[in-house]
Length: 201
Image 1 (cartoon, rainbow, N blue to C red):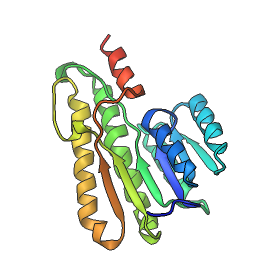
Image 2: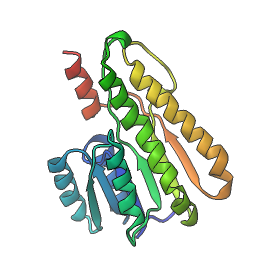
Image 3: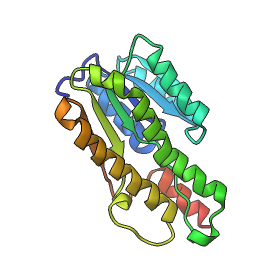
């Protein structure tokens, strides 16, 4: 996508860390934005800050571990006149600890946010994205989706899955005009990083 001016982007996990940095960078290039996050106060502050850059912003408060919230995000996009040209699946969570010690609820939540939500959002938006010129999907994966280590098994599993999903999408749609990219950053001092430090005590 060469020119972002006036195009529409959607970012999950948009109220902090990498998501907010992406929102600021895209807004500076003239892209209007759907911003999705679970934290209402930080989402409001982020939207207010992004609007000062002269673009339109539509916030969506959603807990992506809940399928009905995920569906609501997609429904709002599909029911709007905006649509979307750039989908950035950025939201992610992690728990640090032994695989045998992790509660089922923790494991399921990591899978829901990190893998199920981006897969479901992408699949439902694919018909729309395929109709938009130069549309692009960016999945924020992780180096943890390429190399595994101990005590982050759920996170590794979700990110390996997201990398695989992204590569498969690219193989299926890349030659049909739809851009698909996996971004695999190393450790960053984002909210997710500090959350893991806190959970470890």
